[in-house]
Image (cartoon, rainbow, N blue to C red; front, side, top):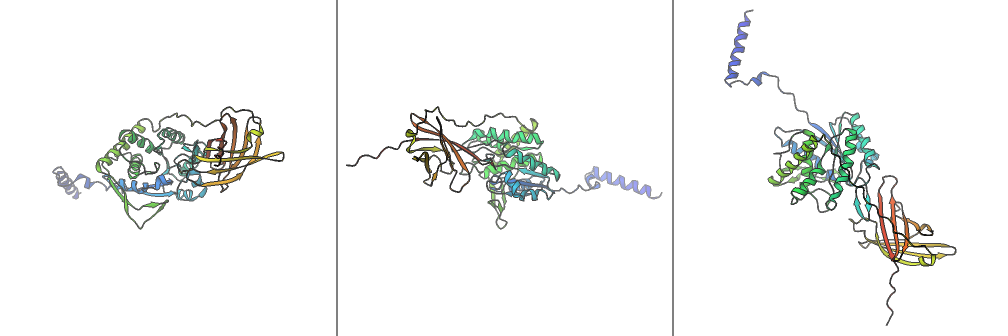
Length: 423
C-alpha cells in the first residue's frame, strides 16, 4: 500500500517530462515488430534477366524511406515460355519451396512464336499462355503465394501489338483474381509522352536500362502500393547472363539522370494508380491478326506446271534475316506420277535443300505438297498453290503441335528468264 503514492509520483513525473519533450511517449510503448522482407519469385525469360530486373527491384526498394526489404529469386532462361518452365520442373521446384509472398509470371514476348509473312505477331493466348498461367497460379496459391502477371511491352516496330498483349494478360489475370504489373502500359505511355527516352535495346525488343528501370518502378508500386517517386536513380547489383547470376561482379544495373528517373517514376505511379482506380483490370478488344489467303486460280493442267519456277517467299523470320527468301521449285513427270524438289536461299545468303516434295498432289485448281521446315527436321510445312496469269501463287503453313509455334506466309513464283543468247 505504501508503494502506491510513489508509483503515482513516478507516472506524474514521466508524463510531465513527455509533455516537455524530454521523454518520448513512444519510449513507453512496445518496440515495433521487425519488418520481414517480401519474398518474390520471378519466373520468366530474358525480359526479366536483362539488366537483372529482380535486383533492380531490390535496389529501388532499399532506397525508399523507410527502406522496404525485398528478397528475390529468378528462374529464367533465354526465350523460355511458361509451358517450357512447367515441363523443365526447375521453376515448380523453386515455387514449391513454399516461402514466397509473390510469384511474378512473365510469358514470352509474343506469347509463343507466330510469324505472318515473316513478321512477329502476338500468338493466340489460349494455345499455351493461358493454360500454363492457370497451372502456375494454382501452384502458387497452394503454397500461400500471390501470383502476379508482368504485362510486357510491345516490340519497338509493332506498337499496335500492345493491345493484344494487354488483353491476353488482363483476361487471364481477371479470371484468376491475380494482380497485373502494368509495365507494358507504362512503356506505351512513355513512348507517347517522352519518345526521347531510350527504353529498348538495339534489337528493338529487350529493355535498355531505362526500360528495366521503368518496369522495376511499376513492380515496386504494385508490390508495395507506394509511389516510387524519390527512389534512387542509380542501382548496382550482380549481372545476369543467359539467366545465370554472376555473383563475382557488381555493376550498375541502371544509372539514369535524376530528371529522367523522376519522369519514369511518375509514369509508373500514374499508370499503377489509374489501373487500381479502374478495379485492377482494363478491357481491350484488339482485332485478331489478319492471315494471308490465296487468290482465285485457273484450272491446272499438268504441262503448264512442269519445269522450273523461282520467286519470293515471305514465310521465315524477317528479324533474323531469313525473309524474304528465294524459293526454287522444280516439277517433273516420273512415269505416271509428278515429282519435284524445292531449294530455299534466305535473304542472309544461307541455303536449305534441295528437299523432295512430299504428299505432292495436282488437283483441278490446287497444287499441294509438303516440305521440311528446316533441315533439322522440326516439322512439315504444308503448301498449297494456284496458277494465275502472273505465275504460281502459294500459301505455306506450319504449326508445332507441342508448343503451337505457327508460321503463315506466301510465295509467288514465275518462270526464270532464259539466259541471253551468246554472241
